[in-house]
Picture 1 (spheres, rainbow, N blue to C red):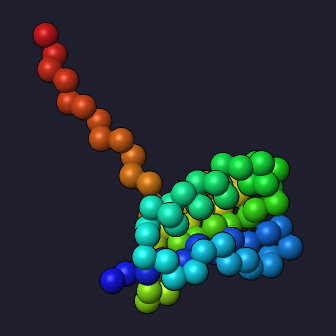
Picture 2 (spheres, rainbow, N blue to C red; picture 1 turned 135 degrees about the vertical axis):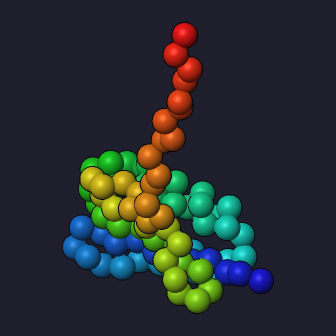
Amino acid sequence: MERFSVYWWDKDENQHVEIYLVHDLELAKFAVLRLTKGPAAQIGIIQRVIITDSADSIIFEWQFEKGVIHPVPQPPVACSGTKG
């Protein structure tokens, strides 16, 4: 069964472990949401947040003033409307 960890970095580039090797991806996502949308992120105390899997691969990354950088957000698909 897959496990997930959440790490974050402060403005002094210190790494912090928020969650370590949990089975619940939803718990990891909730932690990321709190870290990236909370007051510490809004004023730049939190600079980077990642989720890693059991193989230590980054499956999600957010950076201050850049937003989500991994996976790369896809642009919306343009609708091809019919001309009347």
